[in-house]
Every structure is written in C-alpha cells, then in structure tokens.
Image 1 (tube, rainbow, N blue to C red):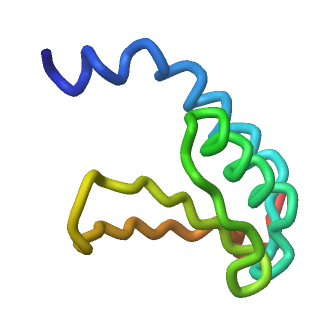
Image 2 (tube, helix red, strand yellow):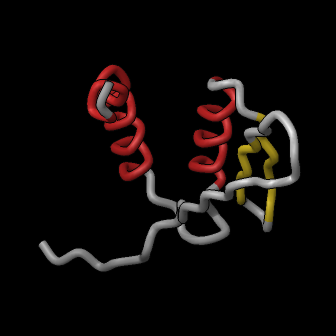
Length: 86
C-alpha cells in the first residue's frame, strides 16, 4: 500500500482542517483557537495531549512499548502579520 492510498481517505478532511486554520489566523502566543483545534483532533485520534506548553503550545504524546527512545515532531501554528494590497 502506498502513502497516497493511506492518505486518500482523510485527504478532504485534512484539507478542510487546513483551510479552517488559514481562515482564522492567529499571531504568535495568541493561537488559542488553533491550539484547541489541534488538541481536539489529536484527542479524537486517541493521542495523549498536553496543553499550554509555553503558553499556547500543544504536545501530542504517542508512547511506544518499551525503552526510553522517542521521536518529536514540531510545527508552527502562528500566522505572520501581513498587509494586503487590493
């Protein structure tokens, strides 16, 4: 099974999620709505969630069977302030 075959069933939901976040941009340390959306999505997938890291950060912890090794993934959730010229 290819990655495309795995992703295809959730593609439209992920695209809608991304569009929703982009439609409601929040500046750094003010991304309360975005953080809650991400946390809720992680929890709905059965992932352990820690909120309020560094203010508005979210950590999803996926624990393996044994050992102390872990993998960390990081993503920015804040928007950059821009001035649009129409």
